[in-house]
Length: 549
Image (tube, rainbow, N blue to C red; front, side, top):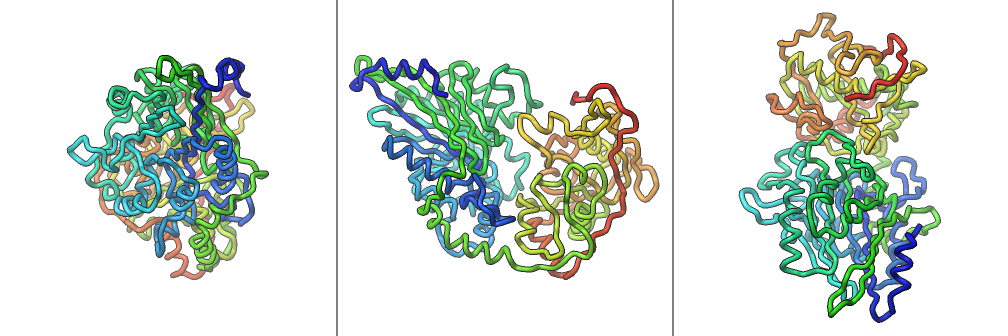
């Protein structure tokens, strides 16, 4: 609903005095362009091809609107995986799609680095728009690595400044080789530096910060919603930086609008779920434009939006090649490796998780492994396994790292995973709110092979590991073990602080999906087996859920 104050402001101004500026925003597209499921090939009510229809309708009403993408564009689907690994033509499909829609700029997201810096730099040259990120600088300097920290655009006569900023937490997740030669400056401090600088130099009528990061506090109450790490600083930007009119956010995959300390904020979900729309109304006063009112609105993507043919044509060569490649048969399963319930899978050992851990252990030469179910849409493997199955089960381009950790570290890691659960009043096991809000984090619950363990959810958080052995012998706290895990977890991602700075024994730099595909090709047939080495229980019902972290 449009606020009545906004309507009153607009109607009160004469056509000569009133100037309106519209900014459209996408974020976290993650390669979802064609509006079709890569797993089932059925049409879906999301994706940039559908949003493009609304974007063009908005532009037909206001020709000089501004269109911004807020990051995490070039990774996330089989289409973008194929483009990164079998790149044979230019431009990159996601870049081609944005160029066809005349985007004004894109902000660098954390997943832009997943395929390496040289690949990113090449992709950046292929579009008709600049990439923004003020806080990612050349190592040892204050020089923005990607050239343009901000842009100046015009909505008619209204002068708009757009500063691009990226979460500085990237080194905690990304492979060091992918970010070599870069420094990631604190995003909040970057905004504190650049906003007054832009205000003084450019004198814009409207100051927008486009931040690939999210909110560390609740937008309405200001209450903390996560342990503060610096990954998300949107709330602090609104409270501590003078001169911001609008804050575009992303990274958390949330759909929200609001106002914090006079700053209009927006976050338009992920995968083309919604289009963000920011509007500002100005009045000319003594030769300058004075901001009278502003608002933020989310426009959900709808199946009624026809797929834009220009966008589909822009990605067609890659899309056709990707679909052929996805249907390549790799092997088959002897037994049942399907996932009927992601929640049930996380309560007891499952053949799919056991298979993944076995592949990791064989590839890395380790005797202990942990892995996570990366998505609630993961369906495991049917009898016939294709590349489509591989890439819809392994959605991130993770590699493997073997760490040398202690028995105490293993116990702490299991306790961190055990905090994923809460016990309901009726005795049933559910997912803790802290893994669902402010964004879902199912991928931060790990399951292990090579050890035996039991988690009791009826126990207090931090005391839930009630059994921990290896080959039937209790794991000693001071004993060391070599454990293989993905590179995100090995860097401490997901609040697994016990892994930070632990010795790296070796790395497997092949993408996990390639490892799985190669393993299946080699074996031809893989067995669905399960040794039931772990389980989650609730030994006694308790009267209230245990949500403290």
